[in-house]
Image (tube, rainbow, N blue to C red; front, side):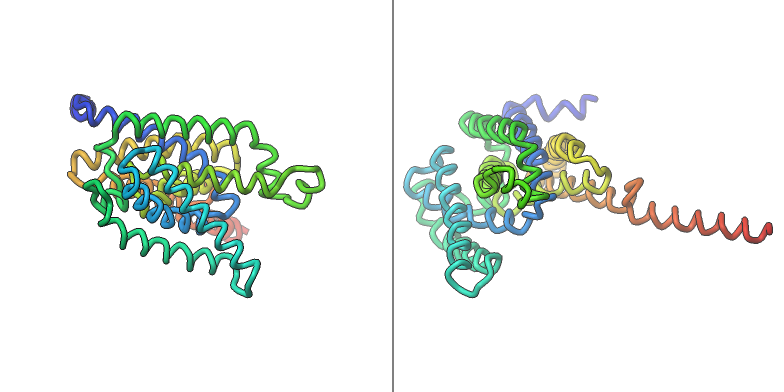
Length: 295
């Protein structure tokens, strides 16, 4: 047991552990809504579009968590609203418009990051560095976790109705557009809180993989919510330990752990696993042959 607890004798690992718990739980919980609403590609675009906002914030106010949060949020909102406006005013579809805007925004962020007034590595934004998390980062993640969980729990029923039966929700007076806009905003906030752990490029993995894994194991949405949150927490902590022992960046380590769990569920899930279904079909086929031969 000492080998497991030894890394947490260091203060920076204790901070990293708390950050993993916060961002893993938040993203795993929120990911259930992203998976059932099929917003993965939208979330990917939003994660990439954070970079120019982070770069501009670093140039203007330095590495202040509040400044980075505001910069990333404004950049993501710009891409989301810009894609919507372009699609409404031209023949270009919304997903194409968003893709065009986010890749341009991403390139712009890479181009201007060198002008930041503070010493910041591009890899820090792209892949994260959870070992460098500070008190202000933890407070930001804690505030975002509280906001995301409270809103999603309080508005779970109207959100699910909006996701699965938007026309019925409108007929019942549910503010569909407002709820979907809130969901997009919460996705951006969760990704901003994850930047220190996994960075811009890998934040989608922390958001999608836990919920997608539970989706392969259960048909219950409540299980997706809380199971995804638990899996996101466990995977993030396991990835942190892997990064410590293997001396690799924390972001890739966390995503690799979560990816391995997703692959295991895909192959060996008791109901929807590929190999489980194959052997079950083979078993039933052999039983039917035996009964036929006996006759």
